[in-house]
Amino acid sequence: MSKRPVAPQLSFERQDLERRLGFPTGKFTHARAPLTLLLGVFFAFIFYAALHLFYLPNFHGTFFAEIPPIFYERGSIPYAETLFAGWGMAILLIKWRKLALQRRALTIGIVPSAADFVISPDTANIVLTQIERAVDNPRRFVLFSRIATVLSALRNLGRVSDVDEMFARQADIADEITESSYSLLKGLIWAIPVLGFIGTVVGLSAAIGSFGAVLSAGGSGIEQLKEGLQKITVGLAVAFDTTLVGLLQALALQMLMTLEKSGEEQFLDDCRDYCHRRIVARLRVLPLEAE
Image (cartoon, rainbow, N blue to C red):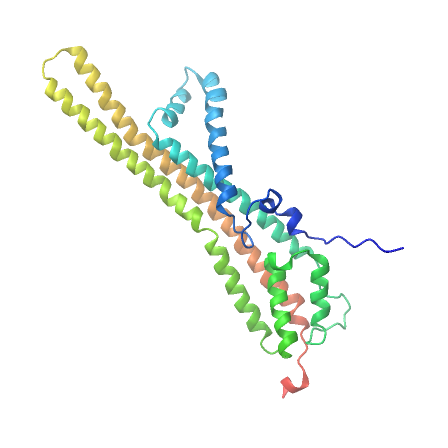
């Protein structure tokens, strides 16, 4: 009777959110645009639906009732700002899920627990085989990709003297990949207040135009003057409210990105510690290298 194959402890194909939903997946914790943009549109829709279905009926006639008009009575700029903010939140959400999956690799032991086991060019295959059994796609994981790359070089070159340096190079590459994974999010955080400033220009332009119309009206009557002044206040509201929304949304995304980035940096430090304790500390220098 044949034995059933043992399922891997970690499965990128089954546990990565982008792959499970059939979208292109990024390297390590990188969140690709197709899924995050779709989620961003969904988040923006939910936000505006919540304003109309929950916020307005419950806070009508209160001070808080002045908040919703900022988002849907100030032209198209707040809609774009909210879409970009939702897109940024989607990126953070996907990266958070990916980081949680990457962290699970730190709990898996891939080096035999025997006290006398040492890593050398002859035993590197044992560790590589353990990795293949534990994970369905090791190159998709920061930790196992790093270890597999270094041990493959150790097996092929037959020397262990440069292993620590190779781990350091792989760590630098992972740092660069992690930093680049925030490029789109940083662009959105930059674009949101810029949209607010565009709203400021549009609103001030409208207010100044309305003010000119009021002046040219001269003594046309109190009612026409009131109507002109109302147009001025609408333009000023657009100018200041769009900037306020943009700055607040960008600030929230910046703070959340800082927390997420801090978690990723801690994870990369944990990977370095894992490699040092479980791989580098068990290396055996061959006699020819000791000379």
